[in-house]
Amino acid sequence: MPKRYEVLERSFINGRLYEKGETVLLEIDSPGGNLKLSSGKASAQSAQAAADGYSAARSGAGKFVVKDAAGQMVGTFTGTKEEAEKEAERLNQGGAIAVAQDAQGDLPDA
Image 1 (spheres, rainbow, N blue to C red):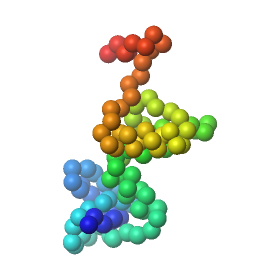
Image 2 (cartoon, one colour):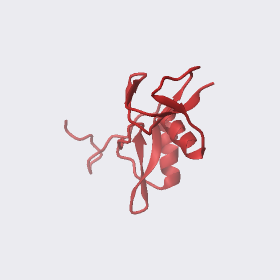
Image 3 (cartoon, rainbow, N blue to C red):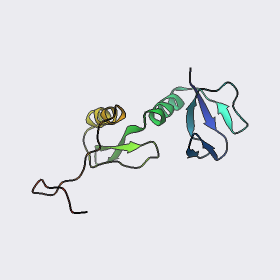
């Protein structure tokens, strides 16, 4: 069963660079000196978002967007909190990221 660990110092774990204070979900028996077993509701939510990959995030003016595990906005989606949570779940289940279209419905030139 995976456990949540707090990163105590900048570390490269499973192909990703984690900064101090981030939470990582791992299936290990004994962490190194750079990890501490964490607990609490906030760390559980952030660990779940990191494990899922995509999560809803407030963008301003009451709108929400979808961000990846690195905190970067993905796609062109904006909507309510509930809509953003549904979109994040769809992406976590393997859905495609929305691509911007121009006013005529065509894909933008690359």
